[in-house]
Length: 128
Figure 1 (cartoon, rainbow, N blue to C red):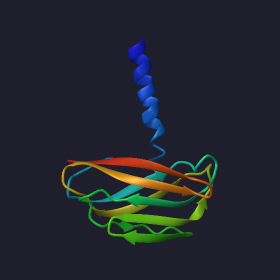
Figure 2 (tube, rainbow, N blue to C red):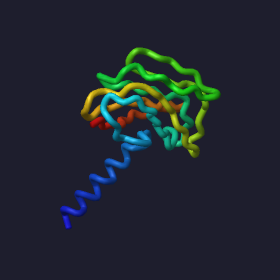
Figure 3 (cartoon, rainbow, N blue to C red):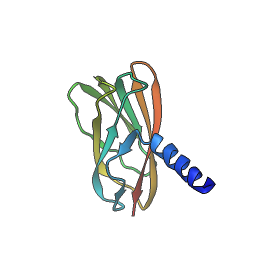
Figure 4 (cartoon, rainbow, N blue to C red):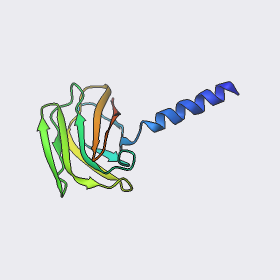
């Protein structure tokens, strides 16, 4: 019974960290792909006003998709959408396109900024 409770707790902890997630997490290494990041809610009821995604090492500069009502800031290693606001009870997708790295696991660090508060997330991509 203890083993099942530990597994359930681990599953709950894992799903609690998936509030900004990749639509698809596996791709061919070195391929050009569209990556879709889903924002499922705000920060404790507060609307989202920015989503910043730090690109993992080895990921080439990505091309962000424009969104009405949002501006985009680009650096060689990150993309940030600012605007909205995106109400807590709605979801949205933030999309980028580019060349993926060599085979391996690659973690995107994400900061969700809201009118009141921020949340940090991670989304892992596997290339084969």
